[in-house]
Amino acid sequence: MSSNDKIILEQIIDQQHQERAPSTSKSEFFEIFVAEQVLKDFDLGYDEIESGIVDGSQDGGIDSMYVIVNGELAQEDFDISSLKKGVVIETVLIQSKLTDGFSETAVEKLTASTEDLFNLAKDLDALKSVFNEGVRASVGNFRRIYSGLASKFPTLRFRYVYATKGADVHPNVVRKTEILGEKLGGLFSHSDFSFDFLGASKLLSLARQEPPSAYSLSLAENPISSAGDVGYVSLVKLRDFDAFIRDEIGRLRRNLFEANVRDYQGSTTVNEEISASLRTTGGEDFWWLNNGVTIIAAKATVSAKTLTLEDPQIVNGLQTSNEIYRYFKEANTLKDERNLLVRVIVPTKPESRDRVIKATNSQTTIPAASLRATDKIHRDIEEHLRPYGLFYDRRKNFYKNEGRSVDQIVSISLMAQAVMSILLQRPDDARARPSSLLKKDEDYAKVFSTAMPIGLYRVAAVIVKRVFSALRARADLDAQGRNNLLFYVSMRVAAVAAGLAEPDPADVASIDTSSIDDVDIAKSVDIVKCMFDALGGDDQVAKGSQLVAKLKEEIAQATL
Image 1 (cartoon, rainbow, N blue to C red):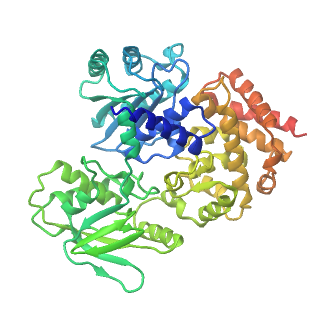
Image 2: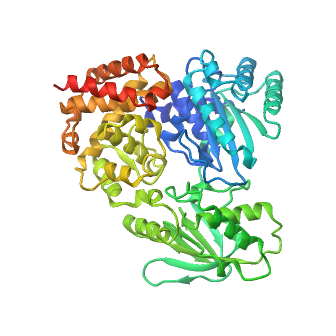
Image 3: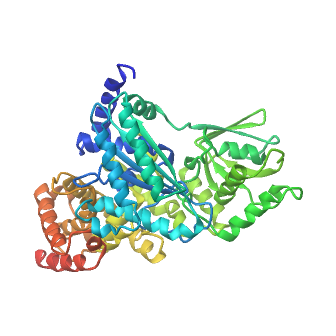
């Protein structure tokens, strides 16, 4: 390690800590920083990174844990019903310590935890005295997904990461990881295991890595272009498109797929038909049998049958792209000369971009819920929040990539949870369904509507952000505890501020958030936590109906 690497890393961490997450402690930010570097290829937002943090007392040496299914983060409400074959379940366990070296004890703790947590014969509830709720919930999520997909023989990958500011790893510490690998292999005989030590040099190298903004796509022929607005239509060799959507080590570039549709698994029948077309060679060219792919880009230039695209996003053709990737990964494709039809559009206005996404996908079976972010209400919210120093992340990670603070960024899912808890007074649903909250049209219409005052969304965002900061400052709450209380406390703070047991949209919009002081929020935290603990104090209480019923009774008295 260069003698300067540790100094530079510490400077970067200190600077980013102050710029991006000043409300966190340095050790908490280091956990976020490490997870962000480790999971950079999966394009996670701040909320998603935070969702995996389980650090606290009784964490078993695990500071954060993430389950990735086919390249997508699988949270506790992740739907596995559409997954049929070729499933890859990758479990990432991270230990992040602001120390100057790597210890044998840390690896030994991970080994002991692995033997308990990933032994499917052991009941997680029986481990309550050993592991905190966040760890048990994360492992429970893995168990749910794995058991639900076991008959489909998924590929299992376990990646352990131990990150510090250190340099060299002693051979005795490395040997401890071999024991961990053996223990894991005894539990899952056909799993892949890796253990990475990330010291100052490696962390610095990861932090410096930025995804390229420009990509080259080789064309089979010169493209057809349009006069006026920039756009191209061309045939592309299947192998060249496959190269376009793969990174340097052969993984699918998830960041190339438009964030609002990338998580759509698609119809099994359609996927099988595309796969059959790819594997049936010697007949018609592939582009005769397939609608092709639509890409939008910030800029596009052509030179010698090569199209250079700035910030490209595949907005239609997700299933086709995934099947092409799988085909070239599994089949003998050396002599495949077939083509794919590719459309490239360079929209000049944000609303044009949204119309392209919605129009190109309206001809497929992608559900409307996957295209919510293209609705006018979300552009309105984004524009309304910006003057107040809040940035609505309807284009996933757009503001994160601009370097905005985590305290300033409001994701679509967080906004939905905020409105669901503050206006609809359903904090139990907001807690239980973080990633699937808006899949029902009736829920979506109640949360996002141009008929409601736009100020409602700013008030909801401000309250949830302030409550989260207050919860983070509590020494008696770990990450899971904060997550369990956040939407209940937000509901009470808003109702008390409005002076009404059940405020309507206009009432919420008229709340003067500057009049809500820290004492008011702290009081609500104490009241909700007392109720929560009395009912059992776990995530099942937060997802159930008893706590919200008791809280409504208390609010009714507090607002008389």
